[in-house]
Image (tube, rainbow, N blue to C red; front, side, top):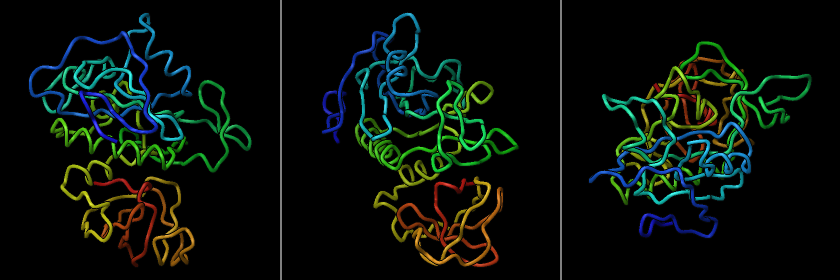
Length: 270
């Protein structure tokens, strides 16, 4: 992917214009990316973001397969943040690119399935139990696909290179009393640490030396960075503190009472 004349170009990128914009950014902007979930499927989410009666929009919509729909050029202000504040700034629409990711958000367990607020049912393989950064108790959350995570990371890298983006935040951080997106199923802390720290070589073998905690109800710790790796101890439990020693792709090597590898998306950085 690449950005040409404020438009994202790539084999899985299309454009669907939204009328919900407020002119162009001021000089030197945008310098921030705000990550959201749609809390609904692709089609109704797209229809909402291009509906002039709804008064909502974003720059990008990322579907479950990693395909991207751009709704407005990156030099235009869209309406994704609402009442918001970050580091002394208010009204983040005027400073930021909005990326909406198709995801159901929080789920409710119903028998052997998990249901979204709009009725869709998900299998356990599509769900994690985790504690939101703004909450104290775990809930069930719809997982993001690896394609979505990879594509959003790649897009953020392009925005950093093109516009000098300095902040990558979640809607939950700029409007914590109103919003929960993108939620604990999205590896926001890990992604921005990688992209904004200068470590842009996929972090393979990079020494991290950071503190984190488990954000899933149970997390297997393995001898190697693979789901095929032998389990080296009982699963780590929710909120267990760990020291992150190293990253290899989508895995962290952590130190607790022992050392081993865990899926990085289930570790929140501290």
